[in-house]
Length: 239
Ligand code: C5P
Image (cartoon, rainbow, N blue to C red; front, side, top):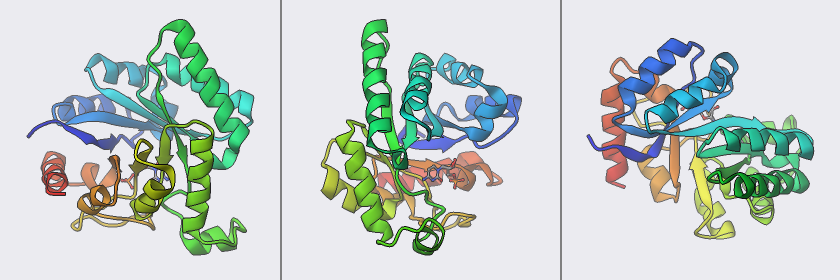
């Protein structure tokens, strides 16, 4: 099996040794590993170094959401870790995203660091239209909200968004061809949906314009995760 450059494996686990075991096991098939809140909270920055040591890239999925200065400083720390990609919440607003982007660009230039891609999380793939309306108080449609937040991320100079593949075509139309679309909530037809609400298969996600797809449980919870990667990769190739 060739290395899959578009499949990001979500290492959603809380055991550092097990995470390293998985990285070793999968690094011949996966180029980008996603380190999220759970693993980063237990392992800290050293897990990023472990992935880099093996020549693989990191999507640091900590979804920063705070005042502009705090998010910008956290973004600079992520850049100094050498991650390939990190993200902030678009709902943190234009100033927050713009300051983070500008400060990261300046530090990277000054310190000769390669600049990470900065993505904005639009609406979590675990949220439905009803949750958005009834809990978040947002009265317009989920699609319009994702479109609005994507436009804001583009205006702030960010590299792309995290959205559901169901919104990928719309985001592409609104933000253009150079804008990255990273889609979690991906489920092959043979995997359970779990807590995700806006899901799509790997093949359809690529057909709708995703640049990268993120998968965790549909690989890690399988009895044979390598077989799962193989199935997903061949499905992606056929897109
Ligand atoms: O196991 P599963 O494939 O559902 O994992 C999806 C991963 O993508 C999780 O790590 C989750 O935190 C992340 N994510 C998401 N929805 C977003 C942003 C990130 O599911 N909007």
